[in-house]
Length: 258
Image 1: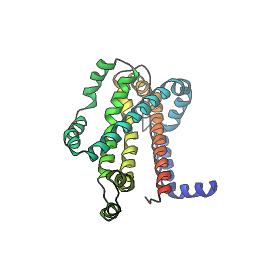
Image 2: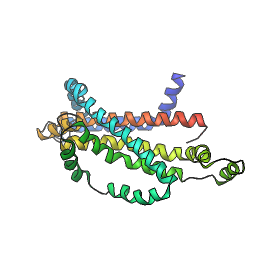
Image 3: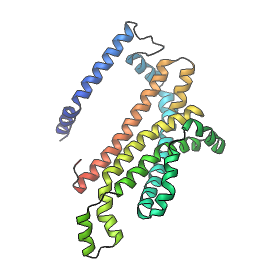
Image 4: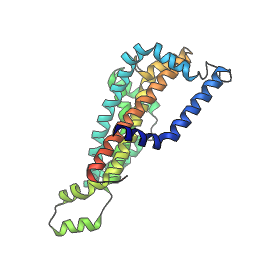
């Protein structure tokens, strides 16, 4: 079974792996012959060496700090976003009152709001979590709300003739139909959480991968800076794949095809 799964993934993502290896090889070759100056863009092997040399501080201090901010912000985003989306769907006055404010919240640059969060929460974990939350809750709200707007009129009419309540119709039809849109919002939100945590650490902090990359950039240590960027990217991809795997499991149990 493991061999079959490996072959299936290799078949699906084989072109990506080939292209990735080609890009890395070309990148390393250009770095070695001096076309790419190391202080601008070091080669992959140099970045890997910097990652190994700084592994103790990166994996022991900065990665856990960023991961904590991401997960806390994500939990808050999913909780508040789901409740808001469900509330706006079930009670129209709430949707008319809050939806414009939710949109407005996404038009304000985070660079402008981060100092406000620092004034409110100080240089603590919660100032970064606030930035993560503001960045990441919007896809969850929109995914939940738009998903719940999907309707199967024939099925709903059948349930009503059988005496189903509004709550039963919501549970039996609206929520299952909302799952594809909702999970799309969850996956986008996870990616945005990593971005928000990095921005929060750039603007104020003493630990985290964003803080480390900013400090290395200020010292013109490009290898170390890119090592932190690689870790940020790997963390984002890993968390995204976890949500995608949960989505696939739930869809498989419900008999959905996506």
